[in-house]
Image (tube, each protein chain N blue to C red):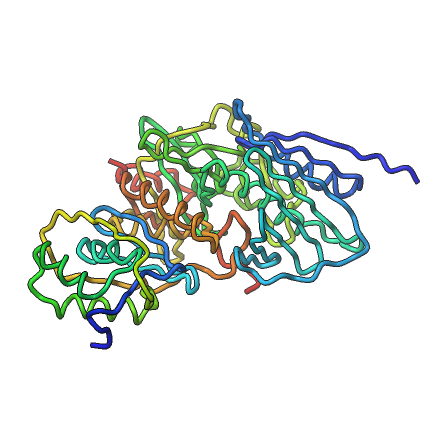
Length: 325
Length: 131
């Protein structure tokens, strides 16, 4: 059998990822995920080599000394990282000054390719961290000199609030994946993908999103669909900004509308830290902690509580916008 | 008090710290608990980053305005209770720490909820839905 090794190139923020994969099914799945990072950054880009192989062997799970995710554990090894998943896939990183070289081994018996995304996220976040960009699991929007970082856990309503604010004239940097770095003493956040993760029921509030049920689900874990922002709200995206406020979003079934209250400095820091993955690595943990503290030190904070159906009335955003002084 | 004045103490290698305003935040990488220390507490901790004796800490704190060794000892005991400090055989290097008071009783506060040990992904620190 002739094996055709195909190499594809993707730009994921400040990274240039070269994907080499002989398996068509793996290549297609990984390409879809890498292709979602659609915000093109200017040069220079850090080089990432990702070689993917199908194998008949299953790798044993390693103890996590670096990161423990629900389906993947990661440990430090000399010169890099070793990640393994419960299905027997593994990824090995050999890191040098200007290159991350990853080898991903995927059991040929693996049917659910969704967990490959965990490895891809590890590949990307490691590359970003190598350039001092801290991944921040938050949304961000900007309008009239203000830039808010929207914080909530997964499923906490970041995407819906992002959509609601875009309809009110805000530009978004994304709804759940941002990069944070200090530049000339100021915290800067940057966009890497301009898509939203919207539940099909969002149409009840925002009819322009259309029938999202007809789009393919991207994960077995959620009914949300990935939606291109430009396809629905053209001219509503931004690429980079200096945050002025942190918004802690809280959905409450007991509220009919919405309310806002200021956060104190400790609450701002805690809110941001809980949106940040902190690896169990002294240098990287210190870097993440410092970046979050520097951001927290320079922004104001608001807790925005909103009722389950409050988005039916666009005026629900008034309390939030008024609080952003 | 359980610590001798001539005993060397140092900050655990599993604890990282960063400045937050005039105070600081500590994160224990083992337990994932994080702590807030006030400005005086942070000044003491900086002395201990590379190791120091309790006597040296007392002396320095008096120069900064402390008139209460017992509050220093109580703070050190709290740090040891939370495994933020550990005993050392010797000092790594002498650290010069500046402190622009006013001096206040050093305090440490542990936040009630630690960071998640198991998270969704390398980007998402939320609790996995299945857990």
